[in-house]
Amino acid sequence: MAIVVNLDVMMAKRKISLSELAEKMDITLANLSILKNNKGKAIRFSTLEKICEILECEPKDILEYVPDKRDGGNNERRI
Image 1 (tube, rainbow, N blue to C red):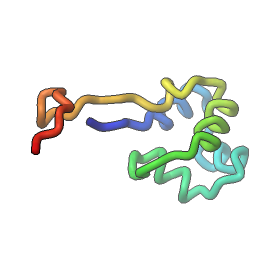
Image 2 (image 1 turned 180 degrees about the vertical axis):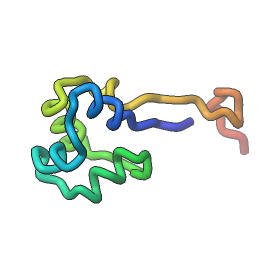
Image 3 (image 1 turned 60 degrees about the vertical axis):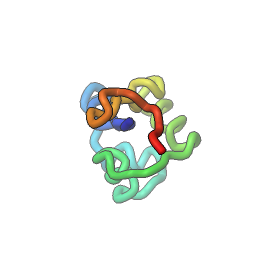
Image 4 (image 1 turned 60 degrees about the horizontal axis):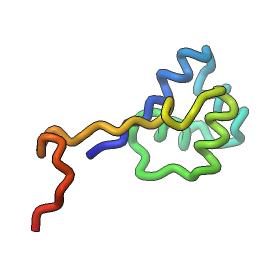
């Protein structure tokens, strides 16, 4: 399974740049860029909340679940 971050899509819809969003969030440009480029491993709820507040969206607009193609979407663990 994979969680895809669609931050770039919402930023484009709201016509806001990465640097502007980083400034409004009081977060480093580098950390926000990691998140935007799907390189992050985790996100704090407080960070997600601030993104949603500024972009006027819901968490589902930012985060998307995409089943893993390797197992055909079957999330069962094999031992």
